[in-house]
Length: 233
Image (spheres, rainbow, N blue to C red):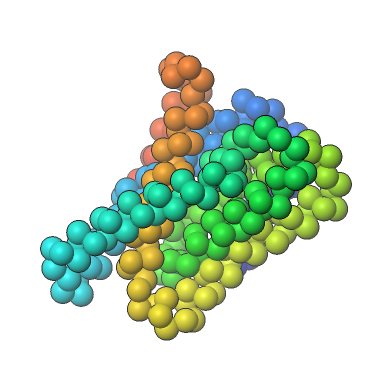
C-alpha cells in the first residue's frame, strides 16, 4: 500500500492539472500547506527520532554531534541538487535557457532527490511517508505544468512523471532490504532531515511575495501545522 500511495501522489498531481487546471494562486497555497506540513513532520517527528534513536543505541555526545553535521550535509546536498533542478523540489522552476535542453538535467536531479527521500522510510515511519506524499502532489502539479508549457507532449510528460513517481518507492524498497542501508538508518534519516528543512523553509519563504502578510497563505500554513500536530503520533 505504501508503494501505491507514493506512486499515486505523483499521478494525482499530474491528473489534477488536466482536470482542475489550477491557477498560480491555488498552486501557491497548496505549496504553502505542503511546506508547513513537511516542516512540522521534520521538527516534531524526524528530528526527535534521529537523536532519540542515537541515544537509545548508546551513542555518546560525539555521535550526536556527527548527526548534526549530517543534517547540515543534507542541507548542502539539497542546495547542490537545486542548482540542477532549478528549484523544482519546492515548486518553482527557474529556467532562463531553452527548457527542453534543461529538461533531462532537471529530470535527473529530481529523480535523485525522490530516491533519497524514500531511503529512510520504514514500515513504521508513517509520518515520513505521509509527509513525502503531501509534498509530491504540488510538485507533480508544478512539473506537469512546466513540461506542458515547454511544449512536451502529454505522452512524454506522463512518461517523465511516471518514472519520477517510481523513484521514492525504489528508495523505500532498497532502504528496507539492503543491510548497509538498514544499519545506517539513523544517519540516512539525519541527512533527510537536512534536505527537508531546506525544502520546506524555501517553500514557505518563496510562497510570499515581497514578504507581505498573506492571510490565505497564513491559513494554509496554519492548517498544515495543526494537521501534523493532531493527526501524527
